[in-house]
Image (tube, rainbow, N blue to C red; front, side, top):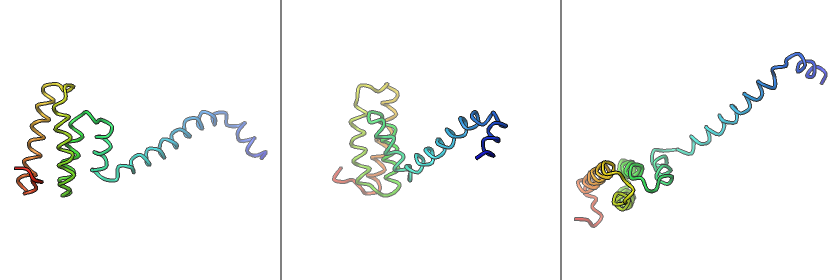
Length: 120
């Protein structure tokens, strides 16, 4: 114990170092846990869509990610919901046009691969 006290007395900068190092270690642990929650691209877009429910972009990207994994029924559900978002009054005209074009494109891809889910 006396060695530790002597070291602490001989090194007056240790409180400053501790105040910097400890938060950085905590941040590193929390960042790693946060990054691991995004285990896949679908999960990342799902979290983004949940955090921005009125924005079409994360929903369109979620649908695309689902389509790439051949989860077509889920992609249709997301695209149907995105269609209601695109018609919302909160979007700028250019944002609405871009979302409508992307939505149409995604729907056409699903139709071309033969996954119409009862659609014409």
